[in-house]
Image (cartoon, rainbow, N blue to C red):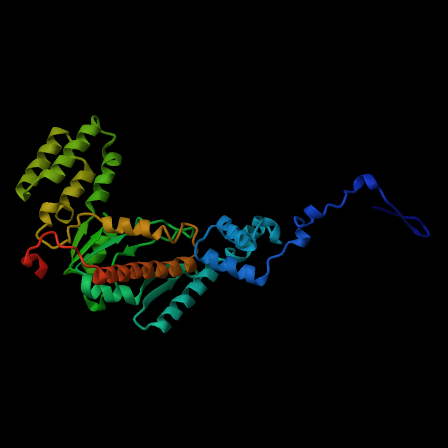
Length: 346
């Protein structure tokens, strides 16, 4: 429709070739006919908090409604709502909500412990928390603690450092502490837990060998021989001897990385550490398994609030699995392998 004005009266002229025929089957696609009700929005927020992908969220609505045509919104509307309303929060606002959540957890259970430090702009600098379940578990199983900082760095460039099975210690330091090769962590443990035996994860060290030595001629042979020295030295004297022979044979006496490793041999070579209790751990493999477990609940794009809530769900899931296993053990009778009365006593 075109509208023209004369000096006296307006004139309207219809141009049919600029129009489209009405199509009722397409009306539902128009933005004016699409909306998200309050209940739909709440469901989207809950599913987003549970780290459910937008496509899965939309498909759940489709299944509940009985088909796409029964909905008055499309998948794009769900994605737009998540992007604009749910995730569009500043780091400062997230820090504020994060702090409120930690306070609520503390109010619900006084054994929940946390510390939160903010930057000058009110974004998060560091956060530490330990739930009541983990603190209680440490009293029973806190002899050896793996600490790992290799898990996903999130979208705010905050590193997740997991203490596997640790708490605020109740003033008691663990007997053994297993970490990645890190000078800063080493100094911190020496200062804060002087009675704790510190061990570097041997897997993280050996993983660095290719990048540290690939510039040397015949580096594949070097890596193989170094592995032999590390794993097949059965006494301190034999390790020292094999290490020196290795350096001389490959002209690596002046290699600083290897020299530093040798100076710190007492915290990563097994022969120097195996007289302490390590629960058969030489590496942070328990942390690696925890990583895969966390991946079921969170992603790199999880918000801080999502992360801490899903972390709590994570621990609850493990606790529930343990309760189910205990119940199965209690109610299951293992059939005898023999007819011996001695076996029956056990």
